[in-house]
Image 1: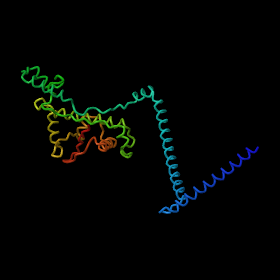
Image 2 (image 1 turned 90 degrees about the horizontal axis):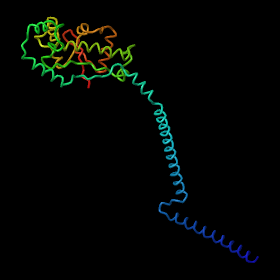
Image 3 (image 1 turned 120 degrees about the vertical axis):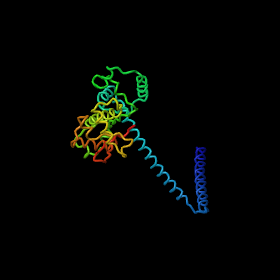
Image 4 (image 1 turned 30 degrees about the horizontal axis):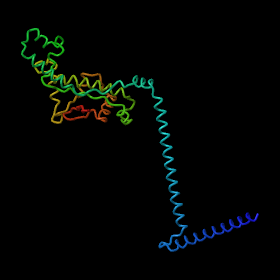
Length: 278
């Protein structure tokens, strides 16, 4: 019993000593804070630390929010990927636009081959039957007489894309749809093709009708059309089913807007020049 009392008394004195040491430490820290040049108190240190902790908490909250948003986007993309299967791809294939861009210029090797054929065919002496074929276009072969005397570029208007059509202002399109515009481009390309086929033929192979056309085409040219390939209203009317009514004018306006044609005026003529698109 006495040993227990002594042990309890020792523990009591140890607790008292610990309390004295703690108070001495507090007094020492207080003195160090008072001796500081900036006179910063321990309370101010605690407040600064609290502000930093608040700032870090806000930053951590923003990071968690951003991560949550990114994770939701990843989940959406995963769900979208799962929905794209073979049936979706087949649907896209079945609904491709009927009009797709095509090459603008002919393949150069074909032109060289054409020129080689022309050189080899030149020394051959023409017979009376060959002369008849030359004078009669219906009896003439597919290449004889149609071969250009020089390399002539036949311009081609490139189809407009869906994005270009959607970017056209509503007042220009009216009730027209995407396919109508590209169908009209097909008709205008007929006029370009027929006109520049005539311009590419040898003068000696032209019949009376094409000679008149050739002379008319040359009269339509001016200093402003140098280097340009164009058609006029008469060409459109002669070679195509394109009607120059309100709808036709709207189509030409759309083609000017998307950069497929440009107008060259002068000499009481409006020329629709093809713009190169690569």
